[in-house]
Length: 152
Image (cartoon, rainbow, N blue to C red; front, side, top):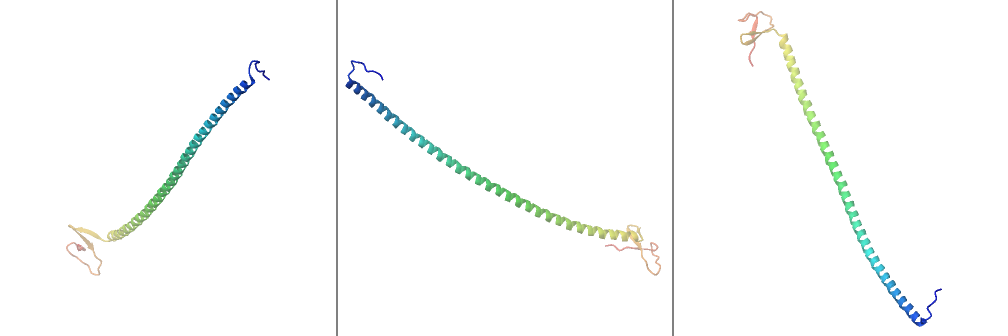
């Protein structure tokens, strides 16, 4: 233990101790007040940050929902476009097939006509076509056994 100086009055020492204790109490009170103000400021900042974070989270969730909806809309549009394209392709193929069948029938008819003409006995009589006709009686015209074919 520390000894007090001999000329110091214990009452004066107690008074000095009381003054020091008072100053310590004031400082402690100011420190507590400062700590409470700082704590309140920190609490406000944390609350503000939490509110901002919540708002950002909500905006991000809305943006994600909009993006998903947009992607689904694009998929539906692309699917519809592909379906329409397929229907148009089938219709075009059907028309092309019908046209090809008509052309094939025409070519077949023309082929039969050409085969019949090829099998016939035809010749040119000037600028007209003459054919020898099978009949029971002989024919002797201006072009021999050939008769002129009628024009269309």
